[in-house]
Length: 396
Image (cartoon, rainbow, N blue to C red; front, side, top):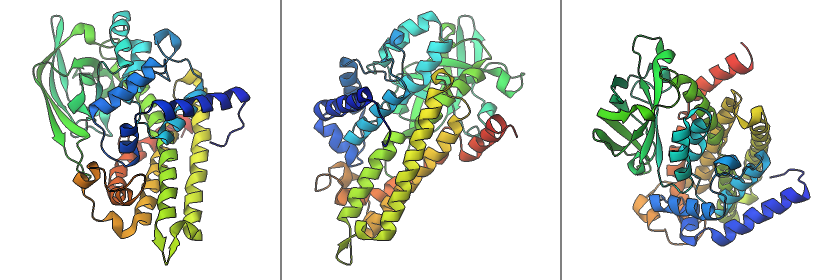
């Protein structure tokens, strides 16, 4: 991070760096830096370490148990933790439904649900996309019919990230089928342990199980779990997506993967010399590094404006962050060369045969490249983001 910082900001960076070095468990750090899959308990353990230190919600105001940090402090925290090998903070509670409940939720919902997010006492997932309703989210068909003090929900959600661990889902449902698409949508908080909820895995190219399809069959949801007003869910959904797209920029991820890329290039050999000695490779790495610096400046501008509430400018962050993450994955795979071909998930999960970005990193590069294709799709495709920028930023 190449910024002109005050003395206090440098001290804060050093504090975060020292904390991550001392408190991040070695086994979690090794998994992250080797691109191994994390289990539920890995995420929960790191969240609790942060919560014990008062850092459980870096982006929340103090009155809700957060740190009250400014935009630069949040950025420093994210980058330093990622570079140290920390897992990402689960966004579904802290960065997505949490801010929505703070703004639109009832006092009862805030008191009951927000404190439990700090230590992942409740794991949340996002019930937005459906078969045929991804980019055109307003066409969703999952129905919620009022029955006394409950809604009866029927439908299907797909690409639901980490739903296999989830206790709760914030779910978009259609409550008025006769209203025009955006007007008939509501947001419900749905207990994933309720009768009628079925989670089925969707296996990805890297052998992982991060995404799922979720079937909802006559699931009963208390009316008290309605967020805000009935049929106003599209307003809350857009507010949430602004926070999600800012997070998808993945600045901390970019910094960490850039460091791993440099280590891979220094270790890989071509004609008896490290690839990092090749001016063409150095040039491409430098270009990505400049792109990350520009993304950093843009993220600070967006995070510092509108009282921290992301506007349509978050779509610019989402596009650039997705492109840079894909560029990093592409160059990692190219540096790995033929070593990226024999990808073996079981061998990688077992820890490979060395510490740091060695042979196991080369073996993971091909899978990482394939996995990063999704960044320009989830959270709204690049094409959708360009449409938002054209209408709401450029006024076209």
